Structure formats: structure tokens, C-alpha cells
Length: 141
Image (cartoon, rainbow, N blue to C red; front, top):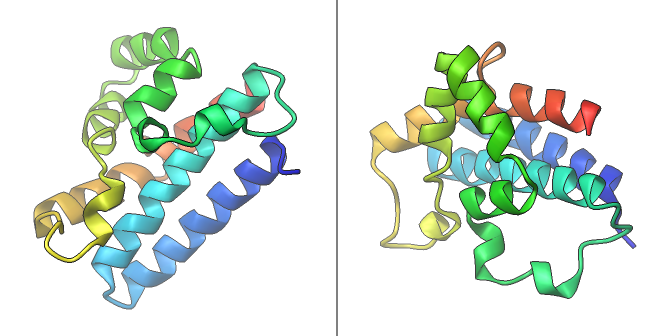
């Protein structure tokens, strides 16, 4: 049984894999793993806030790869509004990251080089990146 701590740990692992892949020039794979880090982080927050001991089967469909959908299910609309009002750069990063596409890993579905680079930066930025913001939310949820 994988609880929210397991999902959060996996999010951190995916982030580390993304950083290593980016450093080797494997941008498409780095993009995928960085997006997975955000997806898993959002799921960890959802589970923690919902007091779930594991992610139910109802949370495993295609919508559960959509970052905006997961954020809404996790009740993060007020947090996003606060982010927009108080941390504009971080909110701009959310606007970039929310469009991450888990299907981009398939041939013929690759995002542009600009999208790859922008998404990676928006996720890993130490001060305003989405993983920094999600870490803060996870700690307080």
C-alpha cells in the first residue's frame, strides 16, 4: 500500500532523475520525469489532505495525469489564488507547468524545445519553481 509519504518520496526521486537527465542533454526524458514529479507531488498532497491511506482506483484514469485537474481535486484553488496574488513569478511557473503533457513521451507527440526548457525551469527553480511550492504545501497539508 502506497501512502502519501510514498508518493511524495517518488515525486522527489522523479525530480532528481529529471535533473540528472537534463544534465546529460536528455531533455525530452527530463521533461517527462519533471512532470511526473509534479503529478506525484500533487497526488501526495491530495492524499494527505483527503486522509487517504492509498490512491483509490477512481484516481487512476486519464484525468489524473492532468495537473490542473489534480490540483483542483486536491483543493488547491485558494492556494493558486494566493500564489497569483503574492508570488507572481511562481504563478507564472504554474501557468507553464500546468500544460505538461504526460503523452509527450510518445513518438510524434514531443513538445517544442522551448516548451521543454520552459517547463523544466518552471519546475526546478529553487525559489519560484513548482516543486518548491508543492513542497511548502505538502509540509503544511
